Length: 276
Image (tube, rainbow, N blue to C red):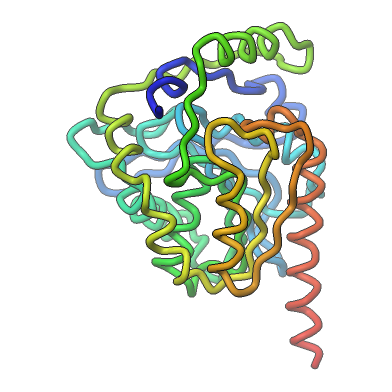
């Protein structure tokens, strides 16, 4: 069930040192009752900006290994979702996928990402929020990438399995530091309530969509990839062999290359249409 894995503190790659080495800048933005913490790389240009949404109990730092291979001239924005990381946590507020998508739209407007359609990326819970956002605000999303998005197919992950995975991750030399994000009952309930949100909205998604899934995902059943692909007209599926749920941590370079290739292909296609 859901609580068997999210109640564990999850480890997040990177930190101040890695952000500095990549040249990303941490910023804050205020919108109504929320103060959003995010970081950026590059500046807005002719190609779409890229907005990345992290998974449940993680924060924006989970994308550091991913953006490492992106060209410096691509405008990247990685934000802490409300209730996570350095962004405001209001326990009295709903944190369902729809509520989070609406708050992300607040951020999009205040950050100026709404001036032209952007490329939206999300993993796990962030993938669910990204998919719902693309359905609710289709005019703002030029393309979409979903990495094992949260849905209605949950496996139970034993505490032993997750503990061993975390232990291996913590001891890895690839990780400069660990960050613990606390999980509250309210956040757990909101995710549980959102279980069907993406599937309820998937047929409304019109943007070209990339779906990436680990074949050994024991959190969300990989059959969800085929269900999403059947519902989203312009979509493609990429399977990662011998990979579980935490794609950007388990296969950082492979997943990053897939994301970059899809982003470039969508951009090139858009350029060709302009010329035609």
